[in-house]
Image (cartoon, rainbow, N blue to C red; front, side, top):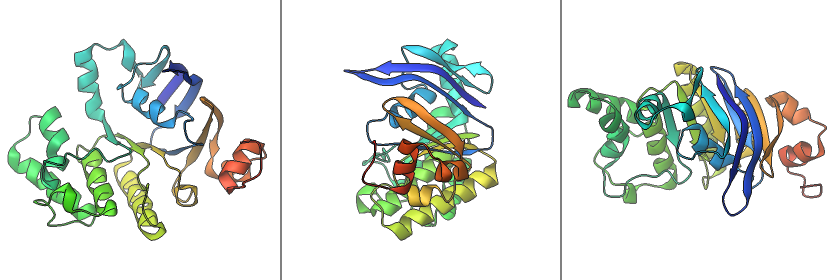
Length: 244
């Protein structure tokens, strides 16, 4: 269980205003909402990269902001993350990018690292790409490498920030289908931020909608699609005229 209570965060302005959220174990949770609603900031708070001004983040019964730096570093081994811009290292090969979290967080034999990298590349349909550099990859291929890196540590919790941004509809659906298959195979708890609602809603179990720094809706995917809330209805169905 991932549970957020009263999460507040400001930068130059308030970004999150008392967000409460519960994501059950084994759930694929879609986090939606207009730009600048606080979705990406919320993901970074969940993984402990940003500290909120108020509120708690409890993951598997532990308050992550009550941990020491060393405890939090150890706890992060349970969380994989795909950043919005993929965050691949340009100077590293595909294999080294994927292996980065294994080498940084775990003490594994190099042969096991290579095997895990090859297995991940097979899963994301990029076998034999180990020695390529990110500059030689298409946008869809970079996304797949990012997914491979986010999942290579076999973490029970994975966060995805815009996993299909900038991709064509066919490639986007392939990415979402792959992530859903990965989540089911691993039994992982997944939170996924995406603006591609048409495809996101084909794979989610539950959906939360952020608006002006607050979680204004939380329910099943079907409940989101059938919601009478004017903000949710307008956003989910892409209606240009409305309260947003």
